[in-house]
Image 1 (tube, rainbow over the protein chains, first blue to last red):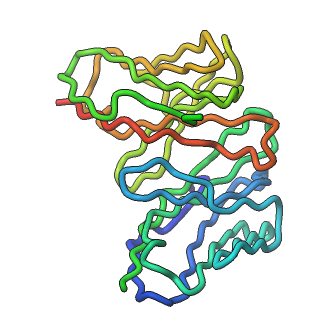
Image 2 (cartoon, each protein chain N blue to C red):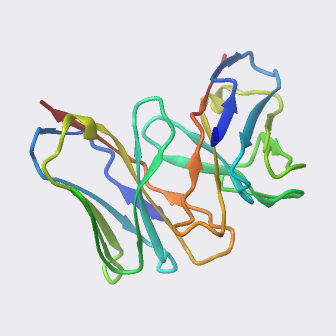
Length: 112
Length: 114
């Protein structure tokens, strides 16, 4: 079983839709959970960051972490064509090297 | 500041050739990382460094070498290039002082080995 599983999609939605992106993981030592957004032919950029379980909201984006189920989600409300990108979940333990383990990424296309 | 810069942007190598991918950051970050990204496969950690003079292997280090003589620079060396090393390579950096320990990524180097 891979440490981090993420459905690679692709996912295609109409503008204005609610998008749900998910990752599961197997390593119970993961404590920090992130979502990175990567536009085509660019480097990833941090979108959301959550420590331990709970929800975090930032504008149209909500990140959820359920450590008991080893499941994290990213919700995008009122999706826009500019949200079209690959979304990568990432997580790390509390170790001092700050190494990240990434999911495969989900390619999202929001159609006008 | 420029953030994380990588050179070259693109490169085509013949099998058996060698090259160095350059990475530099001007944010005074202690931690630097090299990843490779294959289509649909996410990011795999090749090597990382927690400070000048200190490097360690990641998940997929075979066929690569690194050095870290300064805080700013973290070059990745490919010896005897093989087609399996065709990929997009990203360098990233972070610091323990950052609130989210966010890794800042460079724009990537697209490498083809034929």
